[in-house]
Structure formats: C-alpha cells, structure tokens
Image (cartoon, rainbow, N blue to C red; front, side):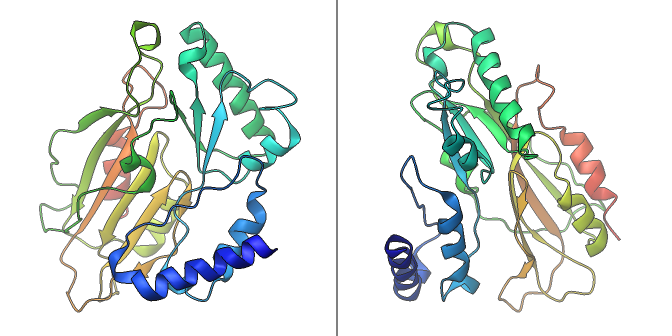
Length: 272
C-alpha cells in the first residue's frame, strides 16, 4: 500500500510540474509484482484526466517458459493476464527456430487459458524498438486526400531487435509501419465496432480522426487490443481528414502479419 501511495504521489507531482515537457512515463515494476494494485493506482491519481494507460508489457524468459517454478508459475501467469504485449525474451539461447516456436506455443496456451490475446514479440536481451511499444516518433497531421484510403508511402520494415549471429537469424519479430488517410469523416459507431476487434498482426496504431458530428479532431490510440476512450484534441482547428499510423508484424511468411489492404478496406467501410 505504501509503495502504491508513493507511486500516485510521484506521478501526480510529475504531471503537475512537468506536464508540458513529457510525452511518456514508463513505470518498471519488480519481477514478482502483482499488476492489479499498480493499475488501480494509475486509475485513481488526481491527474488521471491528463493521461491514459497506453501499454502493459510483460517480459517472459523463453528458456524457462515451461518451468513450474518460473515461467509457468501461478505468479507468472497472473502477470500475463494484464499484458497487452509479451516479449518472449532470450530466444537466442534456444537451440533452433523450432524450439522458439515451441516456447511461443506454451505462452499462447497460457494466454488462451485466461482468454487474453496479447501481441507476442521475439527478442534477445530484451532489445525492442520503443517506437513499437510507446507510440510513433513522427507527429501526425491529418491531410485531405482522395475519398477513402489514400495511397500511402511504401511501408518501412524494421527488426524489433538486432541479431547476434547466424544462429538466431529469422527468430526475431519484424514489423512494418504504414499509414491510412481519408478525407471523409468516420461514422463513430462503425469505427468503434472496428476498434473493438483490432485486426490481427497490428501491434500499435495512433492517429487523429475526423468523426461525423464532432467539431474537433479525435485522438485514437491502440496498443495490443487496448484502445483508449475517445478524446478530442484541445484546439480550434476544424477537422478536414483523418490519418492513422500503424505498426504491425511484417513477417511476410507469417499468418500473423498485418494485412494492410484488409485494414484499409475495413476503415473505408467505416467512412460516411
């Protein structure tokens, strides 16, 4: 209780004194932490209206994921139940790609038991691109274009973590970034239905939306399967279009890769 009270106090202090200079606050808990009290504290701080909980990340040791005292323990599974993104770490210590897939299979089984669907990424030494976990580096500026999804620049493919020799090549998650733009407003009900069931392969999405009947831009964030409540941008600018930037799996040989054409078509169907 004392730790959580101190967390609330320090977060409120940061938000009051440095709100204009910070974009993201990262909270790292201990390896045996129960996420429930921490998440409850974040929802109860005085300045909660200034922030939103973006992503809960859990690191899983691929070499002990089946150990009943470690990765398969009751405490470990409880932590998984709150995660939006799981980092299956130390894949470089496993002897083959098949062993990596077997470790992910066990992890997916634990998730199915709790009826959760977090994004699973393969990493070594917990190296992961913060762009994928914390949002997109580039500012989003909606622009008008052709009706529906306008042509976007060629997608950029990156690795989530650097390789450590030929023995681990191909075991790390690749991702792709791509953008969707539209010059017509979204129907809010249709967009909410789409956002309630995020497309497979998408890790993150962030954008500014033009919603029919709303005179300001609406901010949209997606992390894993978590979406934030719709909030309007505090400006007087009249919406003229929408832009959403996605980060998704880019492994072309994977069934979990992001379907860019399918996502654009689904969003086109949400337009007025």
